[in-house]
Image (cartoon, rainbow, N blue to C red; front, side):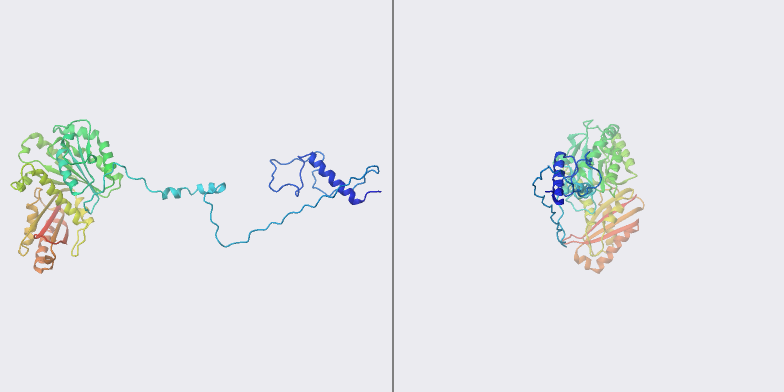
Amino acid sequence: MPNSFYDEAAKEIIRDAAEKKNHPDSPMDAFERPPSAAPAQPAQPAPHQATEPHQAPVPRQSPQHQAPIPQAPSAPVTQEPVYEAPYSPEPQAPSALPSGELEDDYDDFDFVEAYDDDPVGDDERMLPENSAASAIKCAFLGIGGGGGKLAKAFLDLGFSKTLLINTTIKDQPEGVPAQNFLLLPGADGVGKDIDLGKRVLENNSALVEDAIRTRIGKVDWLFVLAGGGGGTGSACPILNGAFDRYLKSVESSGKVVYVITRPTAQELLNPTIADNYEHLLSSVSLSPYIMIDNEKQLQLLRGKVGMLNLYPSANKNFAKLLWQVLKLADETSPIQSFDSKDLERVLSTTGRMVIGSTVARDVNRQDLGSILYQGCIKSSPCPPPAGKASTGVMLLIVTPAMASNPSVSKNLEAAFSYVGGRTDTLFSGVYIKQRLPGIIAISVIAGF
């Protein structure tokens, strides 16, 4: 019995499937390839198969002697429908660690976390911040024996950013922590030889600059303290280049202010001491500097302290005097303030500065203004001013009762006029404190 058209079509489909199994490289129909399987390389058509698109098989007749092969027709292949997730307006949380192409995009923004990191901590050698109140960020460097002893007085007041620099350990004052002392190699002292002192300081200028940067940190003003007459202290201006480089490297807004001492009249009889002092004085003349007259200090303190405490007391008194100027510039006043910019203007004035203080117990005197001004000059540890100065400061500290007295207020105006008439620019301030023995006046005259 002849096969029907549909029987022959079923047989053709079975033969095609058998041929594909025997030739695995032959292309598969789209509905037969698994969705996730991707060929490693483009498939080449089998030799026995045409490259034209697949067409439905044409039915053909088999010979009569061939018995039909009973085979159930292949089940139709069905594809499950794909459903998309419904849209949700809620934002999806980003993955914690992007991967693949997202990692490449994230690398373009890795600089964000770099700037978010905490800055590198200070060097462990860094000295603590100053506990003494001051309107400016400052540090004190004591060079040599005399300068180191004067620096010790500021260290005792709470100026922790103080560094003593010397060529011998023998001049280190008692009670100075090791981190506040820098010993320079090359000589065990210089024996008042200023040329040797220059060589040692110059050869160690990089060491000094590094010590200031790692121990002092960032400050705006450097007060360099040195004793005139010695070999190390008198040679300290050779380090001025290192001081300037440091201030520029930390972008400071201030300068170097030298504080030097003038030897006593008896000490100046020695030609070496006199020459060393003159060299120091000429070297700092183009910078802001304060000169402390040791002879005048001896006269002011003679009979008040013994020989052992003479210079420690003098150093302590000067340190407290300068500190009051730095401190008052940081305070507010209901009457008149002397602020930090006023202070910086005075400290940056080139030339010599004279600083002094006095107290007037009789506040009702008519000549109160003259007494206050003359008392500051007379009681100053500095030599008296010579000529007209560029800038001047008069600071007055009074009690509430004095500030409320009209006659006292009138006399105080006269004190300002005495200083203002002897300077090109006058800065003043009036501060109210309790329990004062009288009117306290502090003056600074700069630019001689």
